[in-house]
Length: 395
Image 1 (tube, helix red, strand yellow):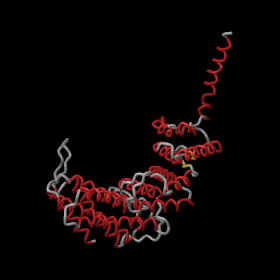
Image 2 (cartoon, rainbow, N blue to C red; image 1 turned 135 degrees about the vertical axis):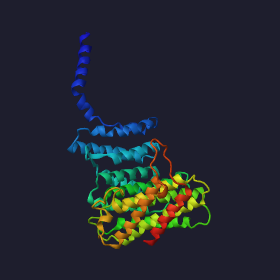
Image 3 (tube, one colour; image 1 turned 90 degrees about the horizontal axis):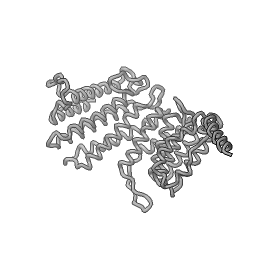
Image 4 (cartoon, one colour; image 1 turned 45 degrees about the vertical axis):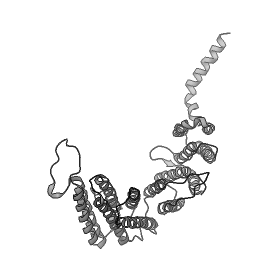
């Protein structure tokens, strides 16, 4: 009588040992458990483990499981009774689904129309829209089918060019903060960078230049203020500089080798205008300050702007040669715009050197193991910015 239980126990052990691998390969995520409020803290880990369901699955078997997984994730994300964190993780996981794994991998194409649809729904919660946007950007990074690319480009451009507008507070939704919309715009720029297309009609180029020029005008407005900027105004201008600088860098991530309808003068004007606007504003802030307390912040933001402008021009840092697909490389060597850009970049190099080494006549070799510190004061910083501005005005 004791033999039978022992036999079946041994059979189970042997079966698990022999067929355990097959069991793991066919086991899928338990999406029903995602909706349980008590499991909300576990959902992020469960979402990260979804790729295990597709290990060694190919062809029809993989596509069938991808379709079932996407359907389950869509159901969770759409369920208003589910906690927001779980709904967000569901749509985030949908954007992470892969048709093929490995290096390089390919995004699951069927997920993209769903992500675009959620992002465009007016009544969708903002956290769901942002999760959808992250998924759209990931598809842009891994590759989007040509017939969907124009739609995605339009969506991303609309996000970047749309100004933040406060909305009326309702019982069902909290108002979006301006900083949150900044995340949307900066993330959309990541998507445009990933697509690396200047398109045939120059639409991406024109829209990004429009954003840069508008932000430059805003910065110039604040720089002309007769009063010192308030903390709120300084914070706002920091956000303007971040967005405009990233738009400038995104221009450098586009491919100009085969681009058409690119207005070289308009691009050069925009790069110069942004550099001038940021230096003007930071000169004012330095002049309005009674101490050196803001020097570090000024240096950081001017560097963010100028290095982004250089990237926009050369598709890379100033320390290397311009790439073959860059805007700079697309210009004729004797063109007026290339000459203007050379002057601008020379000033940026000089300003960067000043930030790193201080005023030219006072430079010295740094002491070994000496603490890092700026080798200039607020007054010398003003002089450096003013010199840069004087040269920029000439071009």
